[in-house]
Structures are given as structure tokens and as C-alpha cells.
Length: 80
Image 1 (cartoon, one colour):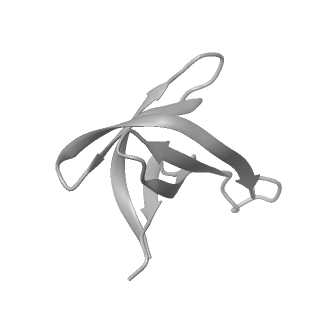
Image 2 (cartoon, rainbow, N blue to C red):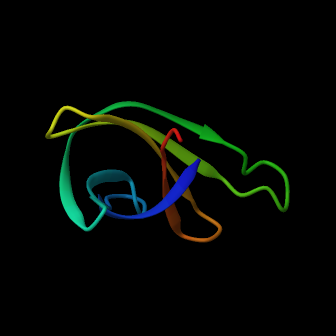
Image 3 (spheres, rainbow, N blue to C red):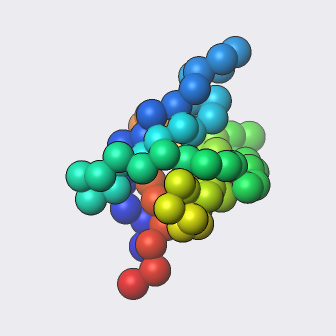
């Protein structure tokens, strides 16, 4: 299940280039490392580009998160 979250990012040559921190359950958590990154969509009209990131946090938790460029929104995958 995807849960909407707030993310603080590094923005270099493009907006939201690389996530640096997430706010999860009202706690600020630093991202230690981006383990993997991939893309989906954005080729056809009406199909937004999605950027996916597999991250490792400072407390050694791994998460998959995505950025929806159409809505400028971040989500985190959580198993339920």
C-alpha cells in the first residue's frame, strides 16, 4: 500500500533529483544511501513519469518510495 509522505530532496540540475530525508509518522529520518533507482511511465500522454527509489535510512531500515511528477507527490510503500 502506498502512503503519501513528505520528502526533503537535493535539487541539482532537476527538481527532486535525490531524496535526503523523509518525514514518517511525524519523525524526520535521514536517508543514509539510495540503494537503487528506476523510472516508469512518462512516454505516453496521460501517463505520468514516476521515479522510484530504494533507500536505506540512518536507522538501517529499507524502503521503496516513488515521486509522481504530475502531482509533485511522494509516496512510501508499506506492507500491510
